[in-house]
Image 1 (tube, rainbow, N blue to C red):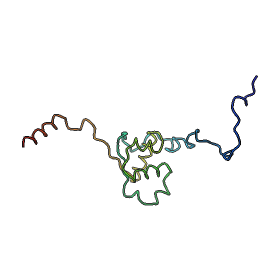
Image 2: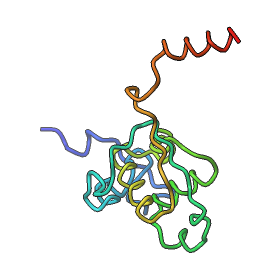
Image 3: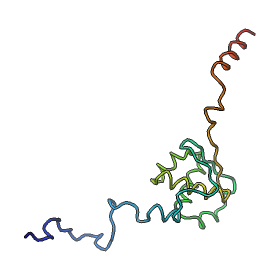
Image 4: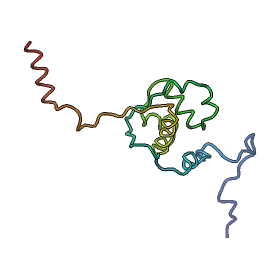
Amino acid sequence: MSDPGQDHPARTPDATAGQWFDDDAGPVVRPYAMTRGRTSHAGQHRLDLIALVVAEPAADDPVWDATLSPEHAHILGLCRRRPQSVAELAADVDLAVGVVRVLIGDLVDDELVHVTRPVPPAELPDESILREVIDGLRAL
């Protein structure tokens, strides 16, 4: 019978010996804790990955930085610089898209951001109509 301690190499003592997690462990706070267990936002319509999130002027008030969670504040900070898509925000904050959608919904409720949704393909003008308009303009 082998010694169970032999299967794993011993950790050498170093400056981080008192640290109870490492970089490979991932985030300490789980996504469901960030959203308080919510998987969707109550007032939220489906946020497409390409929907743009734009910071409102009220978001510039420094009081929000102190009252928001770190994840909310990070998203808001990114949107202050320039409008961001939902997909870009998820990548920048390194969280699942579903979690980011819930967090964006919270910011919409607080009127700190607004979301510009893309035009559905069914509402876009037909290509043949656009070609007729171009042809008509050229005929002038």
